[in-house]
Length: 107
Image 1 (cartoon, one colour):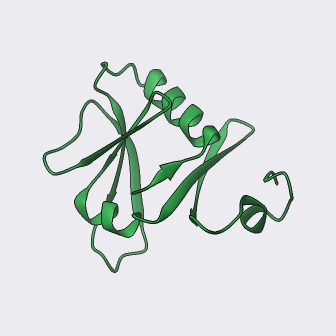
Image 2: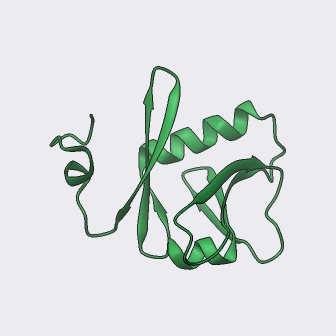
């Protein structure tokens, strides 16, 4: 199942809090088709029927069925640069410095 880094958990909570959602609110990740490289990410009030619910460090992420399969062995990280959020996916076995090019995982 998808796991979140500490940064990703913090960013997800912040996005959901800013959207003034309920206690059930979270960030939903969906995918149009299994062979589609595009993922859609948006805050939502509650999971949709069939969504997998992931809760880590107070962050709630809802994974649409197709996205859940695609992201099964991934780690979600997040970077914030000048108020802009970038989510990064990596394999569970890939160290963060390989994604960002820096030993501390930052760009």
